[in-house]
Amino acid sequence: MLVIAFGGSTHHLIPLYMIGVFLCFTLSQAGMLCKWLREKPKGWVVGCAINGPGALCTAVVLCVVTVAKFTQGAWITAVAIPVVFLIYRRIRIHYDRVAKQLSLEGAAPPVHEQTHLVIVPVAALHRGTLEAIEYARSLGVPAQAVHVIANETEWAALQEKWKEYEPDIPLVALPSPYRSLVEPVVEYVREQREKFGRVSVVIPEFVVARWWEEALHNQSAMVLDLALRRIMHVSVVNFRYQLET
Image (tube, rainbow, N blue to C red; front, top):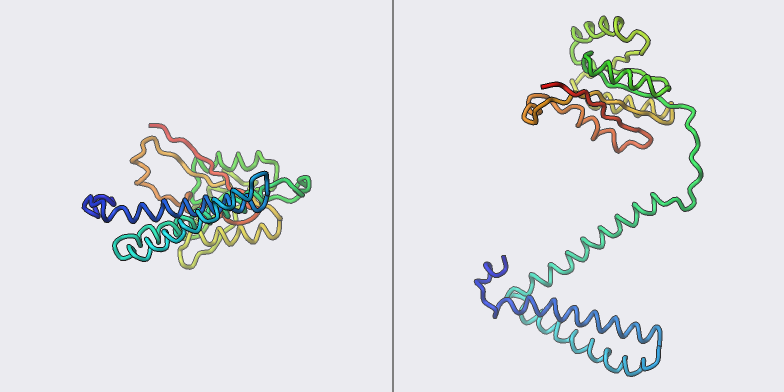
């Protein structure tokens, strides 16, 4: 890209190269100078006499090239190097923070949770829903299903089917005046987490046989998963029901 942008002119490309090179020279020699001064091994005075003036000379050249050729393209390197450094530094801070929070140092042995609730969001009652409910029941903790009421007729029909197929699992109605499907579930999960301490959400979803058929169905399960994954002490299980071809 640079060759094309500068028309292949080495006269204009060399300043970009020189800034990177003399910056490396300056950093390496300054690093050696710090090493000599810190460790003071045998011959450290000679090392300082070599690397000290060397770092100074390359630093002067770096400044001269940057100022003299700044408007001729050197600004690209002068801007790119600090930006890339800051990006890498930020990435390193992220990894250090993650490692610190995952470290076992000072961590207490896990305590068995006495209170735990399993919630199954239900949009409609079908075979995939029944298997998801059965999975939630197998976890051996209290389980309940929730349904966001977007249509009163559908809600009434669901209640009738629920009494027939899953009478022992409570079905909680979540009103949604703005016809939102995600926010009521997220809010209810937050409330139950405060009450029980830990909540698992089993999200039923059916998987179609062909990849292009995915576009024919909404992705509410994925949206709900994304909304729940940032809530502390809430586990999400995507229960997939495979459809045949």
